Length: 328
Ligand code: HEM
Image: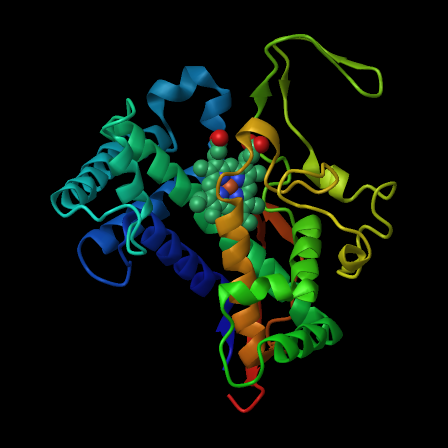
């Protein structure tokens, strides 16, 4: 039974974020299917290299049809999300119940803050775009390393068996008691950062002097090369080797408090989905290796080549073979 992981993980990630944001599932017809199509179109547009952006005089001709497709997508998104907003308004869920989704929370704030429906649409859509690919990618890259490192996969399984046992399923509250799994995820984030340059370029608004004697004049556009930092041999011993133990030996907080490894950025614009993203990734990985031993497919050898689209993707998606363990 051969599993091409990317498609499954992307669908699972999209379904997961849709549940958190709108309280809907994608497998159904109607709204779910429409949202899925629009998200796929959006990813395709954002991930494609549109060289016309660099030749502004060609824009009116729009040879790659990128601008025309965006212009069609935006009103579709607005209409569908507005309909979901209206449905939520008709049957509001109290904020403190466990059934409320992110949209319920934003609607409950509308009376107290100057929050328009267009703002809500923009915030929710950004969460969907930022929170889908990243989670699927980190899970896939971590599985790659575990498929290639049988011994580490075994260690993760031994830890799960000791902490969770054989006969129960992993739950989010178990994650804090899985230090080796946490170290595996940190090492995977270090080696395979979803956003090697963290974010879009930033504009420096004032003159700044930074450590090392560098002067950055106002109006400079800059990007953070986090990939370089996480592969710098002066910071990380043998940076190209997958060694989760380094995070058992030293404590590193990846949530923006340690600039040696800040895959979620840091400061004011740090990723607001970092806790949700990390919890989901740990839970999925734990579930995948708790129930199955994963081995590489002889027909589709693991290929570590990366390709930078919206995030850093695998050029050839992982194909793994799950074999049952623990009598599941
Ligand atoms: C492993 C998973 C994830 C990674 C590695 C990641 C990484 C990042 C990074 C690097 C940024 C840019 C930070 C900066 O500009 O300095 C960012 C921004 C953002 N992320 Fe995430 N993210 C992840 C998951 C998520 C999830 C699950 C959500 C939604 C629930 C989310 C929502 C956002 C949003 C809305 C922003 C924009 C924040 C702003 O512009 O102020 N992310 N993320």
